[in-house]
Image 1 (cartoon, each protein chain N blue to C red):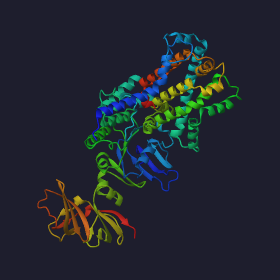
Image 2: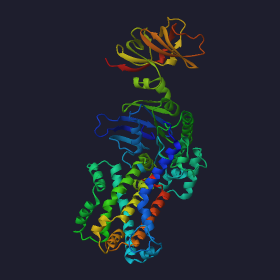
Image 3: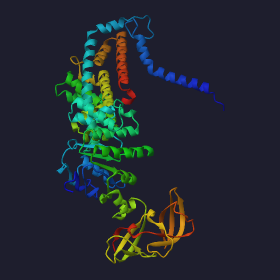
Image 4: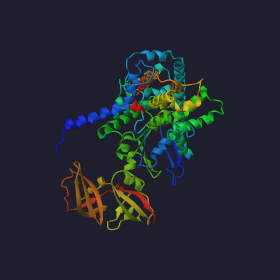
Length: 355
Length: 264
């Protein structure tokens, strides 16, 4: 952790007059070349963190270390960062090439070298030959590319991206998602991006930092976050799921009211109340109702989604959501009785309930 | 009732034409009189010549006052724009105690009659020994032109996306470089519009100038006023036509440069 490229250490931001801090003791770190997503609902403090790293706002306390050096008191323009803004924030009175060249000019790079590096940066983002265009002559996707080129041309210590895909339409978004990932991998730049879109975060980032109400909930790989959410917030914010409360009767076994005892994986003291979660696609149709971790109930609602069939099954007074692959043989119908089963490792412990 | 669209349109166009005629009538009359050969102002003229124009260009008082007005106008335009830029920056970008009061004070000259302002400015300038001097008239004109430059520049500045300035900062520009390379170029329409308006006001202004200047720093409008006290001949009409043409030229230049609608 200490030798990590970027280290965010106990960062706090309390705006004057605010009751609660917007960012509350957040710590995480990135090794060189990693892409990390700061994910959370709007107002969770993710953008505030990004702006503190950039130096556009000052932290109340805590440190931001680049290469082991605390930069939190260094002026914005001396931090050597690249930043792609949500609405791109290109300089409207300059051409594309002048936009890209700006950071190099500020660093007093010679004209010949500037031209060479601008050309390379435009090639990298596939804007070859568009350097003489005015910014307002570019499409949304091209502006995005120009903004990325402007940030990368200076070979920044760290690339920051603020909701990089939110201003693009759906088709372009998928394209740019792969593109950004590809550019980041090719340049090897360490990057942090902010998003409220879980798909974006899961598909683009090496690791995710999930935030809620100013606090960091969990940091982990997309898989860890999706399959092993450690808090109820992370479990409900990312992906769908059915939640249960139960009392731990013996290690790895919880008694849930109205259902059969549920086997789960995770450490919880015997006698405590726990919150458990099952992802819809982890439930499978079971042949008999005698199996452990099985639920028998009536199909209340069916939505056909092509590859998937989403069922709402009324079971023991609660509604269970299940996604079944449509190639799974005979599919249940509305009103019929079904038995669903789940493996113990797919029953995720997401938190303890305070007594 | 069946309405006749053609008749309606003719009526509408006539109304518009009449309105324009009403607005332009004084200028048209002045224009025609300026070619009259008689030594008093009357309409319509009896015979036409360029005699009055020749006299205007031979009138040393007018010519020297014209150059003085030009210089005063240029200085007023430049200083009013510089001061307006600083005031606009503080009003748009910073929060400070008494901001509303400052904003109101800057715009106050809009609300006070010029004659009242004139007396006030004279009472301030006289003890400083600046009556009938360039600094005096420039200061007086700044008082009435800065509200306009603050207004046009504030409008331009509010339209500047602060994230664009942030982007420049992040990518290595010091706050000073951000100002020169980003903010200033982006508010250029407001600067030009403010400068032109300040110049034209200073160039045209008579009421306040009459209180401040007499001989040494007399401006063209004050010279015209003094001339009219003793004589009323077509020279004044010819001079008016020249001034109108100058104003039109300036406005057209701005229109070509940035588009007046965009600037205002």
